[in-house]
Image (cartoon, rainbow, N blue to C red; front, side):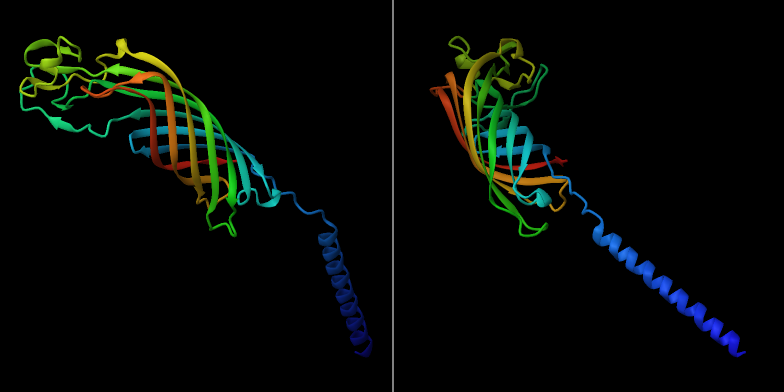
Length: 263
C-alpha cells in the first residue's frame, strides 16, 4: 500500500507539472502571436433626401475615406466626396388648388395657379468632408464640415393646363395669357408628360457648404444628417411664375437625411 501511495503521488505530481508547462506554453504563444491588423474603412456609398427652402433634392454620395486613426477609422476620418443630385426648384408663391370646373380631358383637377414652368437640375459635384469633432465612443456623434463645388444642367419644362375654352392643353404665352390665368375656365393640370418634348437645357454651376452629423454606431453603416446652404447660378434667367421676372441664380437652406454602407 505504501508503494502504491508513493506511485500515485508521483503520477499526480507529473500531471500537475505537465499542465503547468502546457499553460505556460499557451500564455507564451499568446504573447508571441502578432496582433491582428484591423482593416481601415476606406469607402462609403450612400443616398439621401433634402428638403430645401425652395424645393427638394434626391442625391447619392460616393466617398473615399481617409482615416485619421487606422484602428478607429469609423470614428475619426475625413472624406473626399463625389455627389450626384437631382433637384426641383419651386417658387414660394406656389399653391396647389383644386379646379371647380369639370374636367373633360385627361389630367389632374389640381393645379398650381400662375405657374408657367417646371425647373429641374441634374448636378454633379466634387467636395471634401473635414472632421471637426470625432466620436469619443462608438455611440456618439462626429461632426464634419462639407464643402462641394460642381456643374449643373438645368431643365426648364413648360407647365400645361387644361382649360374649358380650348380642346387641347395650353401653356403660358401672350396669346393664351387670359385663359391661362382665368380660374373660371381652368380644368386642371395637363400632367407631367405634357411639355417634355419642349424642355430647354440651361448649363450652370453650384456650390454647397454644410455641417454633416454622423450618427452611425456600426462602422459598416452610414447614417447621417446635414444642414447647410446651397447656391446655384445658370447661364440664363429661369422664370417659374407668371408676371414675375426670371432669375439666373438660386440660394436656399436645406436639411437632409442620409443612409449608406462603408467598407
